Length: 209
Image (cartoon, rainbow, N blue to C red; front, side):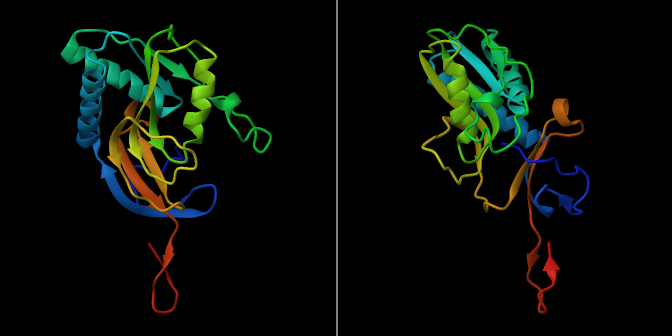
């Protein structure tokens, strides 16, 4: 859900793994990102008529950090500690055999039986990671319901999957990359940026940012 990290303090081109990317636009700074998560936390509580019976499960890597932040936010205004967990979907992806399997961390999920599980991730793109997460989750128990919270929905879905809670709907081009930085994962300040391949727009076909 998250491509290689862009430098936090420069708009110099970066190597995305498929070519050089350049900075396109800033989407969230740290205060805006914090407000988006606070809003999502309130929406989760409102939709589920309180925090009781809710479990937050983050998808590695940044979804785990976001799930913990949501739990802290809910506790700040509800006075209730919401259980959180972490889910690694590496062995449930639909491209196993096409690419190396790269586990990202231990799966640690509390009891989800007859509970409402909110899967948490940073960026929703094709929907394939979420499909993998559903497969992994349902091997751990039978939740009452499964919901999805994402910081950014960038579109381009390949599967019929929709987020219940969205920090920002962000129109993007398929070739662009949405970069999410979280202080506890990446260091530095929180932020969300769009990076993309250089465009040829000069009078002689020069490459422009």
